[in-house]
Length: 235
Image (cartoon, rainbow, N blue to C red):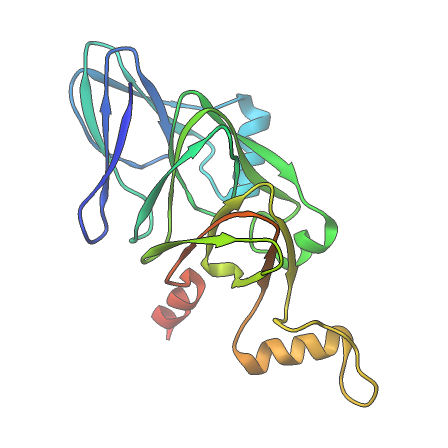
């Protein structure tokens, strides 16, 4: 049975222990080291149509790396594209939606599907436009976040508002609304209201797009904002 382990305190590796016959798939370029008993191949998982959809939906590479323990047991080390922590998530009873660039690797019993978003979410989100990635099947999926990662538990009656750039993945049963304000968004009588008011509040507060989660389930968040970090480097 394949065993995923996050190893290292800063910018950890994903250590993968495989027994003969095991298969995993991972984001293109994730493989750092593997033992000679393993084979590495690049494939379009699910065919050209699915590969294109994943590319547009979640920023994944057109080809994925598939690693198989062909000649015996073996280990490999994987690494995400951005520096930061990783989480190993069990899927089956719960499935998850993934933000852009969060996918690292998964066991062979799982699959990454494409879910269509509503028009409002598609226009405001940075999570795949009209489509977002969703896990399916049974097994484990590994996700990464820029910086440290933290698990939030959303409970009924206590909505949680999170900056979209800090969201890594979330339980697919959660309801979520994307907006450009952390308030109620109502239009009052004498002031600036509605969409204009929301945009002004977004600019003055320093926040961009936020996601408001409700229901019952888990949300994984990261401590760093990749967009803000990239803008800082450009200065």
